[in-house]
Length: 46
Figure 1: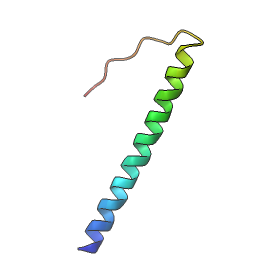
Figure 2: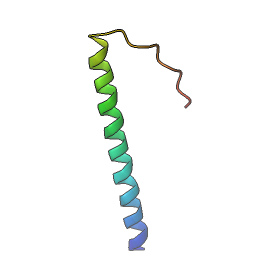
Figure 3: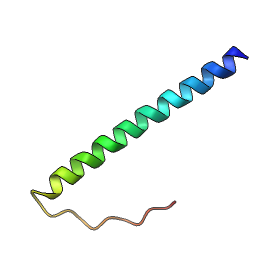
């Protein structure tokens, strides 16, 4: 049972790292928009 919890913790940690990386990239893109025109955003595939 603890292995399952460890796997869950590992997946959550990875998801948090991915989310943080995505948000940092998004923040850089927003900061860059103020200095140069950004390309049109692609429609999301949600």
